[in-house]
Image (tube, rainbow, N blue to C red; front, top):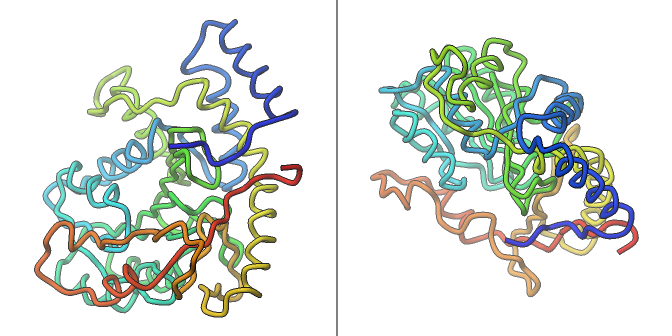
Length: 323
C-alpha cells in the first residue's frame, strides 16, 4: 500500500535526520522517539496515549482489560472486519448494529434495540470516514444508562471534533490506526487513548508480553522507533493536513449536491469525502460489504445494506501546499 503523503523537500530532510539518529543510537525500539510520539499525540487528543504496532493491538488491549470473554460485544456492521475480528479474538461473541444512512455510523435507535436483544457487556462505536458518529451523545447516554462499556474505533477519525471533544474521548478508550492510507500515518501502527490510568498501565504491559511481572497475559504489539519518529513528524503535520483537507472539502461541497453533511459543532478530518451519487472519479466505497453479510448473520440491517451500494468517495489525498 502506497504512503498517502508526498514526502519531499524539508520534510524529507527532517525525517532522514531522525532516521540517521536512530541508526546511530542503535536503539531501534522502546527509545526516545516512542516517548516523544506518545507525548505529542496525547497532547493533541487531550488524554493519555499508548502507541502500538497496529490498531488491533490497541483494540485487544482494551477488550482484554474490560474482560469481554464469554460475553457479547456490539459493533456496527458498516465497518472494516478488523473491528469484529478483534472482538472474536478477545473471546467474545460479536453481534451487529445497523447504521444511519446520513452519516454511515452506528444508529442509536438500532443500538437500543440490539441492547435489549443481546444484553452486551460492551459496545464499539466506529467513526466512519473522518467524522464522529452523529449519534455519539445518544450512544454515550444509552451505554451509561445500561451500564455498558463504550469503546471507540477511531481508525478514520484523526482530527475529528464534536462540540469540543475529540474522537476517542467519549468512551472508556479510543483506538486509532496509523496505517499507510490514514489521515496521519506511521506506515503501520496504532494507539490506544484513554483517561483511565489503570487501562493505560494495563495496555503498556499487554503490548509488551506483560513485562515484567507477567500478570497481564500480553503479546508483542510494540511500536518501533522508526514508526514512532514518523508519528512525531505526522503529529506536527496534522493541523496542516486537516486544514488542507477541509479546504478541499469546502470546494467539493459546492461541486456535489448530494454529499454527507456534518451537523453543527462537528469538524471532520476527512479521511474520506463521501457523496451519495455515482461519480466518475470515485476512489470506491468506504466499505462495499457489510460485516453481518460477511459473517452470515441471520438478521437484516437495511441501512447497512443500502449504504454499501449507495455511497462513493471523492479523492481527497493530502499533497501539501507546495505539491
